[in-house]
Structure formats: structure tokens, C-alpha cells
Amino acid sequence: MEKLKKSNPTPVQIGDDLKAYLKHKAIDNGRTLGKEIVARLTESRMQEEKMSAA
Image (tube, rainbow, N blue to C red):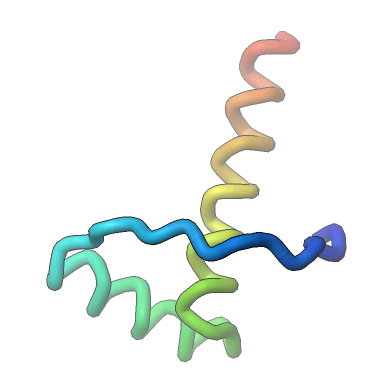
């Protein structure tokens, strides 16, 4: 994954169930919650761009 530049915080409301799920997945993947969210959004974006290019 590419190195991210520091940016201003982006507050997002996440339901308790989803937040708990993401926290557990972050631990499993050796990431912080924030990095887990960024990794998942980046992967989703990449898949979406592949679909658009096809």
C-alpha cells in the first residue's frame, strides 16, 4: 500500500457493531483501527476502479 500523507482528521460516525467488528479485524491484521479503515477503503476503491476499466 502506498505511503499516506498526514491529513486533517475526518470524523465519521460508525455504529457500535461495525466499529467492534473493524477493531477485531484491525487486531487480526496488525493495524490500528484508522489504518484498517483506510486499507479497506483503498481496497474497495481499487476494486471499483478495476470494474470501471473493464
